[in-house]
Image (cartoon, rainbow, N blue to C red; front, side, top):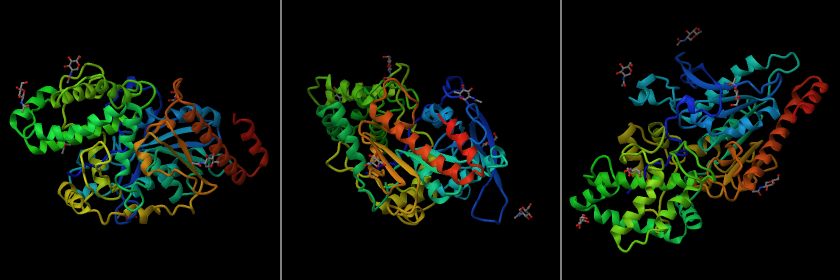
Length: 486
Ligand SMILES: *[C@@H]1O[C@H](CO)[C@@H](O)[C@H](O)[C@H]1NC(C)=O
Ligand SMILES: *[C@@H]1O[C@H](CO)[C@@H](O)[C@H](O)[C@H]1NC(C)=O
Ligand SMILES: *[C@@H]1O[C@H](CO)[C@@H](O)[C@H](O)[C@H]1NC(C)=O
Ligand SMILES: *[C@@H]1O[C@H](CO)[C@@H](O)[C@H](O)[C@H]1NC(C)=O
Ligand SMILES: *[C@@H]1O[C@H](CO)[C@@H](O)[C@H](O)[C@H]1NC(C)=O
Ligand SMILES: *[C@@H]1O[C@H](CO)[C@@H](O)[C@H](O)[C@H]1NC(C)=O
């Protein structure tokens, strides 16, 4: 069976303005629909969030390069930028990625035809970001001694890839980039397809114990064989409280995807304190999920499924308010958009083998391509689009990027884990999950995450110092920055 593309980040619950912890105002800018074609002047409204409370004239712009989802979600999960804004007198900007949130070029029709959807690509999104930065420069760099202010790109996950790519492709626009959990090497020929699922498995074994990992590994065959009959399907529907009864073998494939996604998501957000964006989750959710399994003394296959049911409820029903489980509501944001990107410029091969806890699923590009055509009427040009576009492992000629990765994050499989050059650094956070260092400071943060954040701050100082030194006419003004910086 082919696995669905795994979405990179999974803040999924709709959040309401009154729950916002971090504040900003919302703005829109008209950006060209197609940056690479002069036949049309069509534009659309790209949304961005802005906070100028900490901003001082000549101060930098901290620019978050939005991901595959509503930008509010990312602003609410990137408290690090807020935490350091006053130190740097920075203006905070969070830019939405086209085709997500409300930045829909054709409104609610954006996803209806390949013709409309064709303007969704990382290259167009980067051009949007550069366009917006240029506009911000004209508003905020209005001093006679400084033609433009420095911009630092920040991003986590796919947004981290974009932060790094923005520095690579538009080096004049950003002075440096902090790319957290950015799997820029999760592509064919750069990373074996099984690495991702193997890390998830290791995380469950290391943090949840062998019994937990083995139970999950054994469950797939049991689920498949139980659901061969209608009676079995109806038993499992009842046992796991599904909203609609399992009926067809497609439903069982959907169920397997749903389960797989849950295990992956739990590993990605395995933070040491409760979080409530993905789903309401306790601290260390891998441990919480596994303790349900470990404490359940099951004797037979049905018992194993009961144990798993309890474990799943940590994710699906932590609040106790879920009435039934809907396996068809994808547990993820931006599903359609990311599905399309996974078929065009972000093909990230994934597979599982007998060495991990998932059901075996080979990588089959031909089949993948056929599925893409069925869903979106497009086919990937080849398996390695991003290599041509972004250089694959050959990134030595780029500069001023920090790649940080938690080793407990499945996406570290495609991350940059060693220093590439003096100016492209890797920060390893042994005990961190996904996008952790970009979150706001918390009393429960491990030392390694605090250290990673200190590394980022030092690098940002370095990039900014260089920028001001090179761009301010008057060295005294440079001192102005130096003395005001901490
Ligand atoms: C900027 O963020 C801080 C912290 O959330 C908040 O106190 C302040 O009101 C915000 N400013 C604006 C202009 O939204
Ligand atoms: C685009 O805008 C320019 C400037 O307003 C105009 O001269 C040109 O004709 C427009 N092109 C198209 C294809 O509409
Ligand atoms: C898009 O929105 C318009 C106006 O709200 C509505 O009439 C139309 O049915 C919607 N179309 C789709 C495809 O959702
Ligand atoms: C379904 O559940 C009933 C009642 O618990 C049990 O008797 C029956 O054997 C189960 N059927 C299957 C296929 O597991
Ligand atoms: C969620 O938990 C509540 C309280 O324990 C329970 O009544 C409800 O049936 C659970 N929902 C599901 C889908 O299991
Ligand atoms: C990369 O170099 C920095 C020093 O510039 C060092 O602190 C860091 O540990 C190195 N990263 C790795 C993964 O070796």
